[in-house]
Structure formats: structure tokens, C-alpha cells
Amino acid sequence: MRLEGKKTIVTGAANGIGKAIAKGFAKEGADVVVFDLDEAKAAEVVAEIQTMGRKALFVKCDVGFADPVDEAFKKAVKFLGRLDVLVNNCGVIRFSKIVDMPETDWDFIIRTNLKSVFLCSKQAGRQMIAQGGGGRIICISSIHAVLSEPQCGHYTTAKGGMESFCRTLATELAPYKITVNYIRPGATYTELTIPMYTPAVVRALYQRVPLKEIAKAEWIANGAIFLASDESCYMTGQHLTMDGGYVMDGSLPSAEYCKE
Image (cartoon, rainbow, N blue to C red):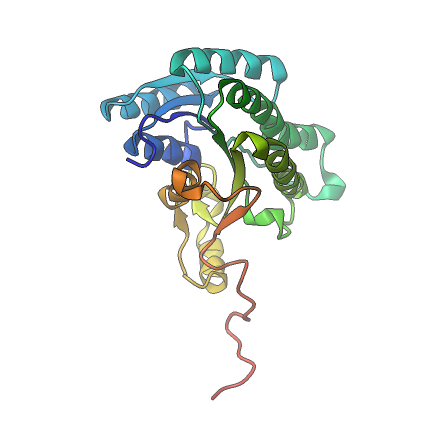
């Protein structure tokens, strides 16, 4: 019960990593407000949290626009009474080479994956400063903030921008004991990614990832639980990479420089 009594908001919590975080928070004793656009899926998550004996609420919100975010935070704080933790998890992906990319796709990804972090963190920061007592802001980035991902230039830009934003926000909010950290997941099974993980992609990932596994969303949620807990109180502006060793590994799959 590391988060007992904590009042939390998780964006994009109807599916995938966000859903795993929301449920993981509840198991650790937190009350959770779910921001999403998928009413049916979000209602299922809320119902599951309530069966754990925790308070939960769904607020329909497009987190890429200021007015809906402002209204959603008002509803969330009224329901929760205060705000201890915000998780900026909402994220989408589209595929296009940069030279062929429609401007509408660029704007959609940047708005949903990056502008949303600014809008939600702004509201969370204001609330946490006003109420006192510190707080936690956690963002879900990606290893592709530091690695290229062909046909996803808008996505990698958003994740890289998110990380730069988090470091500056961490500095500004530190005097109020509000920490800001971000997680870099590697390959993870979610409703969004499962169609992308064809047998060929899975084989390639198993060659590239030293632990030779694709993460479950719950594994990433464990990182968010740590960052939301008191255990991470002396950590801010930092990344937690959870990728099975993908980024750190410099070996050549299926090749050796020498043999003993």
C-alpha cells in the first residue's frame, strides 16, 4: 500500500500502459481519476478500481486542448479533494515518412503527445502549489526519445520534447517539493502496439533486446508506482528506462568480434 490515500489522475487510462498504471495505483491504495475519450473502456477501468475498494471517476477529456483540460481538472479535484499525483500517459502514433507527412498528422501527434503534457502539468502544478505538501508528476516517454524510429518523426519529436519539458518543469517545481520524472518504456504489449508486433518484428526485437522479452504493461506500471511513492522523494528531472536493455546494449546481434 505504497500509495495509500494518494489522489491521482492518469491520462489515457482506458487502455494499455495507462490502464495498467491506474489499476496498479489502486492496488497500492490510491484513488484514481481516469482521463480518456473512450467511454466504454474507461468505464471498465473505473469499475475494476471500485471493486478494489478505491474511489474512481471517468472524465471524458481531449487533453490536447486547454478548455477541456481546465474543466476536467476542476471535476477531478472536486471529486478527489486534492491532487497528489499526475501521470501524463496519453499517447498516439501514426506512420509516415517525414518527406510525405501530412501537416495534419504532425499537428495531431504533437498536440496529443506533447502539448497535452504542458496543459495537464500546468494545471497539476498550480493545484499542487496551492494546496501545499508537494506532489508527483510522471510522464510516459519512450526509448524513441533518444533512438530514431523511421516513419514516426512526429512521435519521436514529441517524446524528445516531453523530456526537455520535464527537466525544466522539475527545476521550476522543486522549491515546492513537487517532483517531475519520466519513464522510457521499450517494446511493450498494449492495444496500440499488438498489431505492430508481427512475427517478423518480434523475432527482430528478440535479437535486439538482451532480456529477449517484450514488456507487459504492468511492468511499466511498476515504475510509475515507484515514481509516485515516497521511495522516489529525492529523484526529480530524471528518466527511468524500462526496455529490457535495448538502449544500453551495443552488441551486434548474431555476430561476434572474436571468440575465446
